[in-house]
Length: 208
Image 1 (cartoon, rainbow, N blue to C red):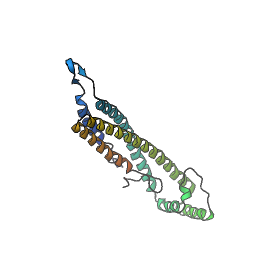
Image 2: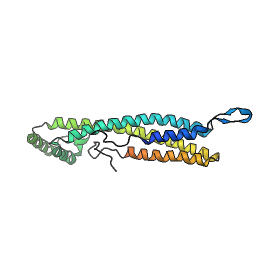
Image 3: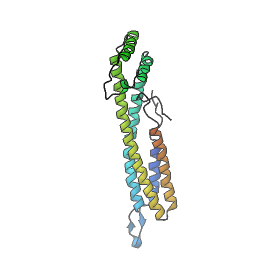
Image 4: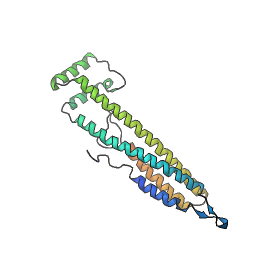
């Protein structure tokens, strides 16, 4: 299961190098040989670059937890009795809700009892194990959305820097910064591609 999640925000490193290059002209000589301070666009870039480091850490943590959780879900779903239990879960959606205790109807109980008899396995324990995994996926999805929200805020900051550069007549610098925004679009799309399936569980790969 190692490396099952492909990209771990690898484009961030390239973005940071590019931003550092863009910000390299921050110490310009003013009148009388006095060193001028960074421009508003350069200050904005430095702020967003620092924020990007923090988001990168959050994203790396998400992918590490995702790898571990996908492996755990994969092991659970590889058990011989899973297919039959999955069919019951799909037939009775109320069983899949971790926040509400499902009302066991006679028909539902009949199928669950038949399944338990066939596999000599407690359906109550199997349901509990399944819902525990769903809980983990819900928590991880919330972490992913938090990283995604921060990423969008950083993109907005870079776009503000693009506008600042354009207003100052620095077309090339603005174009370079916008390339970073486009790279972060790809990073966001990669994050979005990992979502729980219809059973609330992360699968072994991105959902397109």
